[in-house]
Length: 315
Image (cartoon, rainbow, N blue to C red; front, side, top):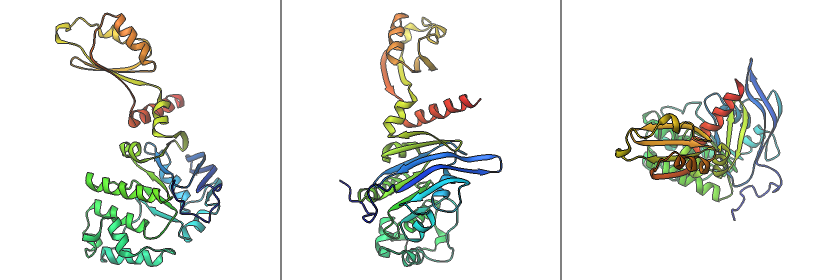
């Protein structure tokens, strides 16, 4: 069982609570009636296409913006109180880093400002910055700057860590090391909320996935539940060359429950809302596929299917 870092917070008090939150910019509704709760020890991925409201949601959470209506609470208090109290660490895309100081000097400043600081050496090591401690911040690569932002977000014992596109610019090995560190934070009972465009990261790391679209919460569940929500399954097979020309693609497109079909040479990739019925009908056409595979959608495909369905309803 995970040990809750926020020992003084009642177990019944959500780490984060949005209740009917709305935020508009002119005629654009960035957040639309958002209601959700996050709980201790969860690692939660926030997904959505560009313009879905992810950044505005994080800004509201951190007190950088105020809701037009509804309430946002962190550990039962307002966002600013929680941030000032050191209960929240944040790594955002916006905002630059101080130039003409070394990495160690900047991390030391962040530790000095945190109500419950960690040691500078430990923070540098956790972020993979030990070898870069004496380098000027303005001499860092984009991926290295991201690691500095992570160090600043984890300079002290915060109970909630908020990350906005945290691995942008990192190479594969740096991303793997980063998520290993995040898992350690979650194992200590901290709640981690991260927005990302790397859906494979959400699939691999998150206990829970939130899908936003036009400021509304479309889906909330485990990655497996989000995939199931999309409904469709993938069917792929090959046809031997000696059957070339024997299969009428138009007939294949009439298969029951088929939602899409792609053809590449003699390889066919189908999506179906009832894979069993589609495969049964496939054999009924006299088609005898090789290397037949039936699988659920990946998280990225499920995400596309869910948001596309919502767009279709809006038209």
